[in-house]
Amino acid sequence: MNNGKLPAGGNYCCGIDIGGSGVKGAVVNMDTGEFVTERIKIETPQPATPVAVARTVAEIVDKLNWDGPVGICMPTVVKDQVARIAANIDSTWIGTNVHDLFTEHLPGRSIAVLNDADAAGLAEVAFGDEVVRTGTVLFLTFGTGIGSAFITDGTLFPNTELGHMIVGKKEAEHQASSAVRDREDLSYKQWATRVDKVLKEYERLFNPSAFVVGGGISRKSDKWVPFLTVDTPVVPAQLRNRAGIVGAAMAVAKHVTP
Image (cartoon, rainbow, N blue to C red):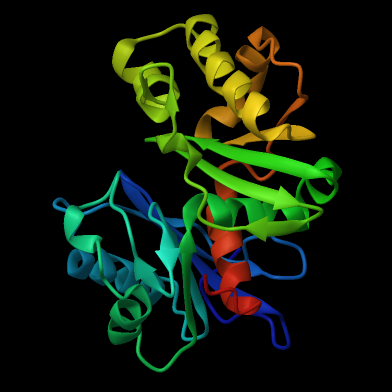
């Protein structure tokens, strides 16, 4: 990897993944899904207002010495390029035209913006486990919240946001996100019991052929996936925490604009 001049003739795009704690970005080889620069991460500004986050995104793109297309994923429903909810970001995002916002801060280049779990799902379809490309797969990211992407025979149905579904008496992500595990100091086994409860409800309603679990905690899937008792197979994501960046880059490369 390098941040200097990239090899001529490559199929490259920049991907930016906006999270609750950090904004991450890299330039991606679209043929392989590999980073061709280092990954740059900057703490998410607080408050994480649209302008503050857009400036952080522009700073990362500048540090990458990149002047081409930029795909951006973030934890919100993006419909007609307008942010519709703000569960884990500042409420001032609601109603913001995200395409116009990022175009203003990154002028003269192609921009695509989509939901972060949808981006990760796209990346797993292209570069992950074969199971993601066949049947009805529910891709879930466990982090600050629980992100979701519905994928049927490799095709994305966007903006599902199943982490906000009520399971029992609370939203799924309020009882089984990775952040909840950290906050309540749960053992992997204790946390897996909560994840199991959520997956069983998703299984009952949607009957997927497989669950694919991602997010940073998927790196330690061997410590908690074996405790799950849900009947549907549970497969760890292959791209781990690279998926959002890769999927965001794919969105601008393939002109995916929910």
